[in-house]
Image (cartoon, rainbow, N blue to C red; front, side):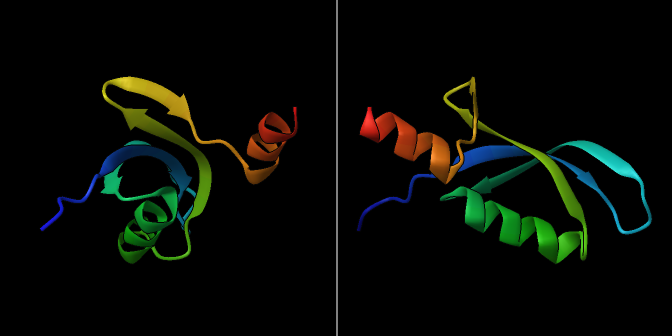
Length: 73
């Protein structure tokens, strides 16, 4: 059986009441799974920022456009 690789994601969100919450750490296989877990706890929140933590290094999560630009170059 293969072990799943989980990554930590740090979120900065605005709750539906308007309160800003910083540094919410959630594990997930990818950003989509971490966002799904976040929204189970904070319904209707607005994600302000998401930062990926891999091996103690902060890596901003890239957008599809940023990744496509790197591949094309």
